[in-house]
Amino acid sequence: GAGVSQTPSNKVTEKGKYVELRCDPISGHTALYWYRQSLGQGPEFLIYFQGTGAADDSGLPNDRFFAVRPEGSVSTLKIQRTERGDSAVYLCASSFERGRSIADTQYFGPGTRLTVL
Amino acid sequence: DAKTTQPNSMESNEEEPVHLPCNHSTISGTDYIHWYRQLPSQGPEYVIHGLTSNVNNRMASLAIAEDRKSSTLILHRATLRDAAVYYCILRDVIGSARQLTFGSGTQLTVLP
Image 1 (cartoon, rainbow over the protein chains, first blue to last red):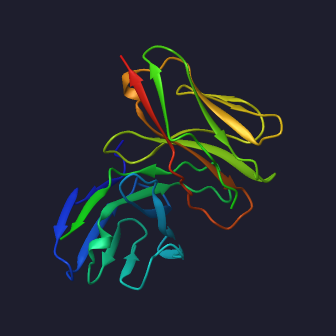
Image 2 (tube, rainbow over the protein chains, first blue to last red):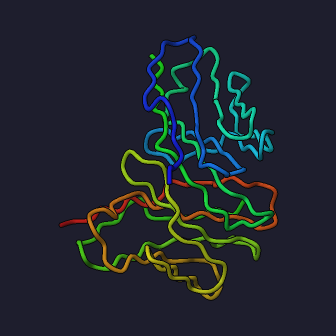
């Protein structure tokens, strides 16, 4: 079956511009995560959705970052007034969470490489 | 959150076993040990997880020390496609945080 997909695969923008990154999770997965990965480092958590609501947004670095998941499926990560430091690979993951099971596997997309010039 | 320590890099010869170590001396009784790996230009993928007992699946084996302060991911016959960054991650079963907390991982190079 189809895995997690992310579009675009690459995005180049200029400092100060607005960008939107899209994530299509695996069908039926209730949980969706956004992570950010800088070169040479492991992914860092940004935000977690359970259904339509953001259950944990503690990883968002500042108020320029915002994410939505209006119908509990596709999610969009929005970055306003982009800065050069926002350049990174943005990863999306989804999982089918069964209650409190910590064993729920997260399935990752290939990521969107964002470059802010 | 309890932290993990892994070597920055390791090398292995193709078709030989690989033992990837992870130290987690401050692990709590409710922490599961998870391993993910990230192939070049891809998102991370799940490998295996365990709590106390050793675990086997089609990808790898996980050996957990009796005191749970360390664990080892074992690839029984490394292939070139196993070249990746391997992450050892602790997940608290009763904590509220659902996200994965990645460290820097171990970069595994497989030599032909």
